[in-house]
Length: 199
Image 1 (tube, rainbow, N blue to C red):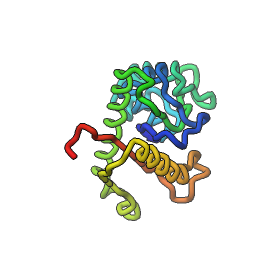
Image 2 (image 1 turned 90 degrees about the vertical axis):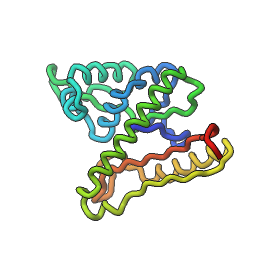
Image 3 (image 1 turned 135 degrees about the vertical axis):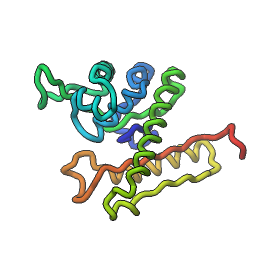
């Protein structure tokens, strides 16, 4: 995530991506908010009730968290849908960017990052569970890679920029712009320093 994701530093478009700062991270540092925002980005506008059904939550809980997300500028009401009794919400940005964890409260960053990691793991488990229910052409069109590298911080940043540039070439943000036969795919790219691990 679209994501549940913390995209790399390059490829950030301030009109389409929200950069987390000390204030904004407080608005997203909750597991349910990360999941709600991911669903709105992937599935488009939804109501609190619709999100509650998909997430196994009460509509009161999703309604509360939608209002919190709105307070911090992550979602807005969709003016083209809904009534006074049924409010529809949509995501404001295509992704959430945390460039520098030193610029935000460590507890907020940890809560947010744990929520992103958990949502990513949940998505991976769903994929494995549903793999053989996918159309045949999609069953071979995936990869799960785990590569260990020895890099300097500068090399790490360069690799992040290069991978992000490749991903940006494949981003189709509006369904009409996507090629025929295109489906949502989750691309998760993590570059995690493991300084404390055995070498």
